Length: 316
Length: 51
Image 1: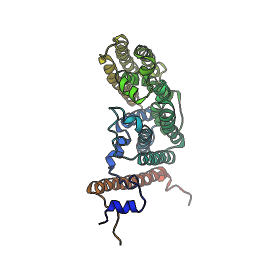
Image 2 (image 1 turned 90 degrees about the vertical axis):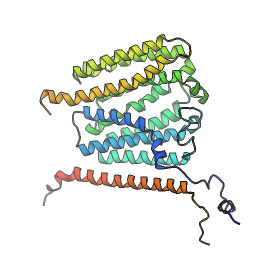
Image 3 (image 1 turned 45 degrees about the vertical axis):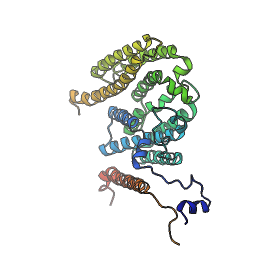
Image 4 (image 1 turned 120 degrees about the vertical axis):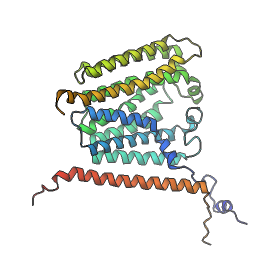
């Protein structure tokens, strides 16, 4: 009796060619890194809302959607390229490609199609400055960070952090068609926040990154040096986040809130600096958790400030 | 002679259906977005073209 497999083999198809996908739409959604996407959407929206000219609500919604899909494309391309090291780390081994639910080629095609669609949609329907910036962001994350920097230098997330910092600039450009000092400062806040955020994670995931061969700062420069650098970045990002108030872009509502959050951020970084060489990583975990709250709160304050200022001034 | 040499399992059929529905929804959303944005962009000028 001829079985289906025998027929396939008889036609010269190998086992891999005959492998049929069991990937569901949900697996492809996971490829887009929804949690990262949510932060991207939020910061991009703040960039757009802070701009002097808010676009038509439909255009604004399309811009946010296109930026979200662009971020998803970056995530899919990152998971395609990093599948080999993802399967070595506990945090990432259940992702769709290492777990075998999605084939690498499917993820690559998915990422490329989403990248083209998101950039094209943003460019055609909103403006090409925003479209070009989104294209550059995807390129920066997928090629510069994932392919070039991540496995080569402990400065990987310092430079690569630019990719995560672009969304508010893209959002601002979607509203205005340009780049301004204010949007560059929003970029700077995320850019300077990224190293202490990821190095706090790397401190208590040193073994995993080491096993995967990713040269994170603690693996290369040691724990003590990483803790000092985390503290140094915290000392820079905390006052930097107050700049929009100092330069007159926001009111004291944002300025004082950002200053207070910065003090707490530096305090957490100080606890990391002072923690011992042992396995007790509670301060690093606390800093990692607070860093997420910090970025969200700073941008939420910026949004609240941008929304409330015209109301208080009586000019909607 | 027309027998398909590859038979999908139930799981593969469900997965393919899920992917097909997602692609259909994605395309429909894209078409609707382009339609609505076109109306929004040309809307105010639609009745102001020189006769």
